[in-house]
Length: 436
Image 1 (cartoon, helix red, strand yellow):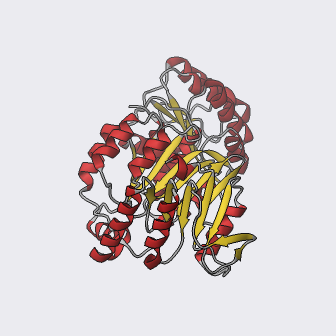
Image 2 (cartoon, rainbow, N blue to C red):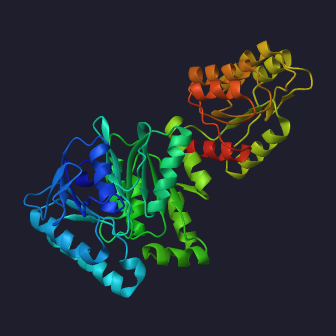
């Protein structure tokens, strides 16, 4: 697995001078992403590709072989990499187990060929690997836009296209990325192999997995139980139509989701129901400390705050009342019609100078492990500064939903507080970091 995520040398099979071909794209991505190791272009008839001499076959081993050739030629490429002593190979071509019994037989022969040589095999039918490599990136994939900044979030996906969603969301949300691996049909390397390696990876702080079906559910649960890092799973193929699509997409049998859900709960895995939930959870877990389940809903916007409170309770969070000292201070600083229960509604009529001390009192209250912040339309900088300062001082986790308040949002963003797209999503993001 080290050769997959952190190779020192890479060979690209199918490297082409034709810019329209995926082998050209792959070699260009490897050579321009900041990878500092040796790169070998393999193509019997190319001569030279992107300034590299192309060789017909490998004459010495490399750590990782990237195979970007048609399915019919994949066996010869894998055999050549195995003969040369490569430690791992990623087959990016499609047309294998996802096509039916004949394709499954070819896929099994590829895996057997690699196994006999002691070479790990990723794929086939995948998008490759993207991994931090020194000050740059190994971009051993077809994705042309690299993550904008490094960080601690890693993703393992059975779907290549979901990787595109991941990178787009990482750019939009400012998520720092460590590793990405598209495992495709999992002929050899599975999501469990990747999770076991990422559990010990110093660059990875949070692991996300997009899975259509587990190759070995018991092994995955055991790996998740041993992993001391947060693990978030988005399981596709939960319904009958989705299960049928999973078979045609990766050749996987999706199975019954009820059993998977119970296993996730036992292993301490955060399960996301939707793509938004998945990325929200990754964002929250990358930004916030783990904390208890007692939360304050702090707001100036009554109705949306009620939605946040409802969602929090549905998700198993607790909303205890504030302590007497907090109630007393809120009564002193906010208007008489402010709500000092939970939600704590300071109201838009609270004087701007009253926000920081009132907010500090909520954060200091020992009844609360963390805070949900809701603000729709009251763009008073003191509100944002009060939340940011209290969060920094106490270290308590905060998730927020704000709307049409650019000054407040800027203060929250500067403090690293996740701002989510609805009150319910803010509650779900907090629930992801809440310990049981």
